Image 1: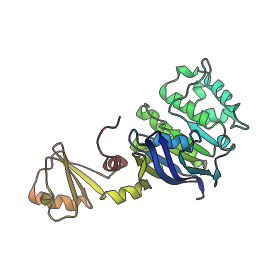
Image 2 (image 1 turned 180 degrees about the vertical axis):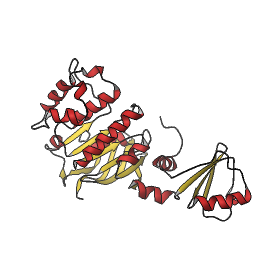
Image 3 (image 1 turned 90 degrees about the vertical axis):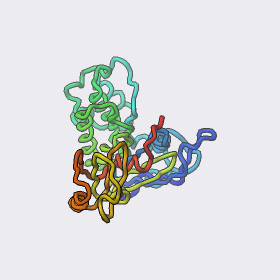
Image 4 (image 1 turned 60 degrees about the vertical axis):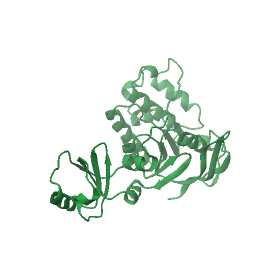
Length: 294
């Protein structure tokens, strides 16, 4: 795949505070790229620079190999975390208004169908539910048939059902060949939708790659969690990783069956056991720590 958006040695400072510190990345055509990180990591600043809304202190952003120019705004779509729309407009009115901002636009009827807005097309936008509002904002970001789509925490506050429906819409958009840059606090969302991710912390990239590759680099294939506190010696000489938190033991292992055979030989209790694969939430916490960021 060719590179659609490229960032080189990007740095941004607010006075003496460095929000983004010398990051580089390439976004490939047709991929969904996830930008993850705790509060204050530099995600929002990075996204605003990539969207062309903020000029970096240092570094360069290239779109199709060239510095961002006038055509960039015509070829990108942005779904912000929140958008203030004019009062007393229906869903259809909002789409017509945004269509007027562009030289050409996707047929409004197509967007209403694609984003599942048919039943609420004549409803005032401020009477929409959370899921309906997010689908409207997604439709507005697609009005100009963008090549590159920015989704900034698009499912925050949605219930699980609405979130799943939104994920399906994103998958359908990706199948159309669009390139997507997604920020999210939901690790499952990133794992479900993103081809590659970058995890930011304190203004820098601390990990980048496909979810599968990052998990394989940082964890053994299976995680077994048990009530009680156990040590490495309780599991014999197996190549495992053991940690303990709040009276519960977590074991990373290659084989659950081998682990249980070794474990039963020294400690027979299996109360409260759970078995699962590592996920992006495990990776996020491992790389960024457990402390609360405000």
